[in-house]
Image (tube, rainbow, N blue to C red; front, top):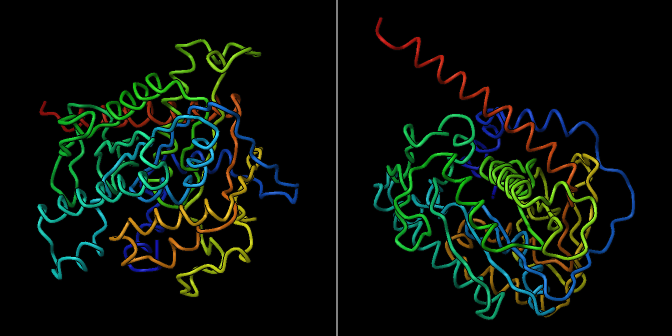
Length: 365
């Protein structure tokens, strides 16, 4: 996001509101990236790609090239965004000309962003990808991890006023805004897709919705892997019995991608440098990989980003800074999946215990 007041508040807010994300950063972010050579990401024939994104536009920013490459190799693609992006206060104020937009105007903004999502993915996939938005609360995903885990105590969106999924085409329409429900839905999607490659936000992304989406995705993947026996299989002989490749993409990091803060809305590709992960992003032992893109794939990614018209108005230069000749990822292993899942589950248990204790102390004698 651009360096506006809303973005600054979000950056200060990240991890402070989500104690689980803070614990993850402290546990796994103790070392900086090394200068090791970055491997080229190999995409095989007939891959099944699942892209999980927090907001409309993140699917294209983080994995727009990956979507194209998988389809070019006769694979299949499913794109899922967790929120409709209806919580961007400054953008809705700008769009409506009102200092305090009504909940209905935030809802209308979210519905517009979902239409932009469908148009962007249509360009990336030439109509061949499945795309859906889950409709959970924008700006509230980290709270679902440690404050609103139960259907009996759902979260209420600060912008739309809703406490359940309102998007009519959402796969879980009417579901309560609670963490257990979001995890359950993600597990269901993973079961249906049976992916060989999964792209998720990096849990250390500086935007709280991104980091929370990454953690929710890992929780869901770990549950699915356990129920299908994939974690127990050290060696698998087919794509149907091994863990999918888990690729974490980054969108929000200080002064990254390099150069966008100067305000240029048009990278000078093909001469622009490849996009690399920031050198100060903690390594965590993950393997760094980079997907090369052709100029035609970069052009198509740029055309898809232009379909996110509401975001072009408020952060056009930032979006354009991802129109580069590579897409970088951190690749997690099965060990990483288990370790992160265990850390998050422990944090959830502690949060639920605190909530129960709080309810007990507030109950009348």
